[in-house]
Image (cartoon, rainbow, N blue to C red):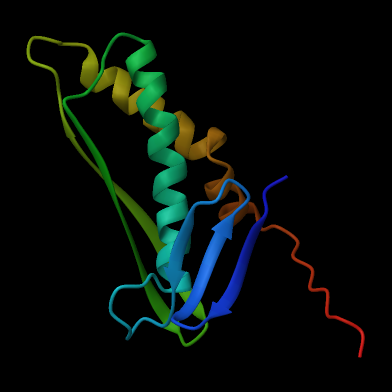
Length: 133
């Protein structure tokens, strides 16, 4: 189970996980914070990259550079259009197989092993619990 608490503070909103890590949350017109949509994109990119990196390295092909850019456009006030992940990599010098290994791993992770991506593609039930009053 994963749990995150989001609460209003004197400085805005903060999301905190059970391990004590936190991130400032706000609207897309505020400086120094992530908007909820940006957090969603970061979750997708983070899910993919933290899975791709160890699987590629485990196969003996640790990339010199590994980054992912995640883009989405709002197509309506409350609807995102297609989300695109674009990898930026630098291959290890003299490693002729690294590109093929990376591509194979990245494809499998995107299609099958990233929980966030699967939730976005397949849809995940959400429930809201309101306090009694």
